[in-house]
Image (cartoon, rainbow, N blue to C red; front, side, top):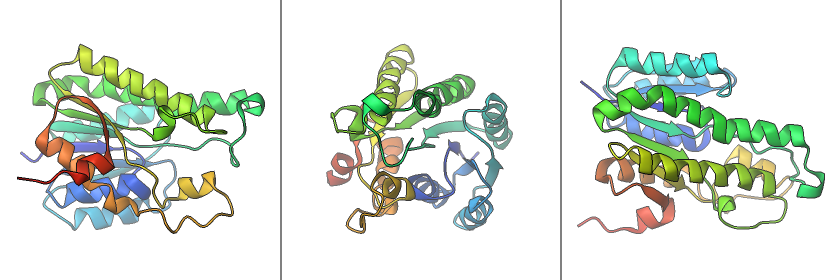
Length: 235
């Protein structure tokens, strides 16, 4: 049976690039997006790339009902072996300093980057344990570096990293990775730098092979950067 992956936030950007890599390797996919824009088109393209089936669900990752629907769809396809928590939001744009950070926005960012991923992990864990599966939580250098105006986003990502670390200790039967793909030429990155030219940033598809490297090589659980993984030379 072909393995199944859930990739959140996969209608564009890094999520779509990761789903593309998996589809070409005949994975079944469950993908989602908050809006239908681009999602069905992405599913159609992904379905044409390999032998796997792709299901696309529109919904908010912070909605418990939507989370349950994602896992149910993956279980119907069978052999849920991979969860990629990629869905994200920037928060206010331009990014404010902490002194002026709207607390309602911080709550939303934390819901997206901490609560929603843990909910999906909890729902997927029985299957992941059964298949010796993998969790990839997409993080950022803002989780470990102090950048002005990145306090809200960075704090949420730092919380996700600590959650990932504890999960890895508590669940030795699965692999848990918190992956920093680095700066990329995405819509969200453009929102972080309004009015600036970000054409010098690499495209997401140049970083997505890092996820394939993790799931195929299965190093010990931990924090990785796409740059370090892709710099490795395969023997």
